[in-house]
Length: 173
Image (cartoon, rainbow, N blue to C red; front, side):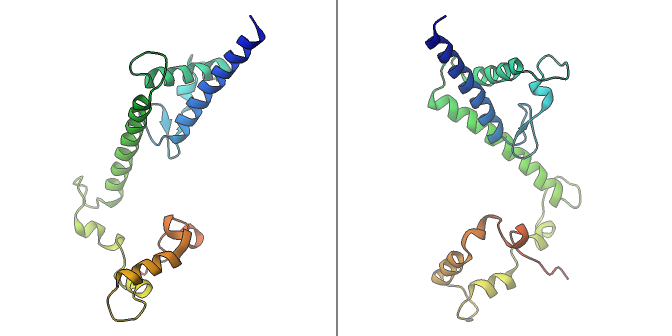
């Protein structure tokens, strides 16, 4: 075997493992062996022979299996359509898990549905909203006031509030 073929084989293996790791990291809770947020692969999924040990060969096998699963037409290559289908399936599974969790958190009466009363104290606090956005104190928020307050809020919009609290303290009394 030539040096170039060995390098090519090693590169293909590295790409396959990278694909598997990237795919795993991008997933949420899923039926494909991932667990928890962030998509950490379950040990049992990686331990292909069930002996309680994960080897490099098993990691490569898991990568090959993920690749084959994504290769819908079996041609040995992944098209944009196949990658999109795989990403959409992962997102759908993750979304379904998130929705199930939301219902479990909010459904106080156990009927499997969320009624407005079950969300009443979890929605936006109108008083805090007006205090933050109504710059001129006229009891209403213009588009300009809204945009200004949002831009002044900066990078905290997506969960980076004080001490990681997205919405700050809430008076529930």
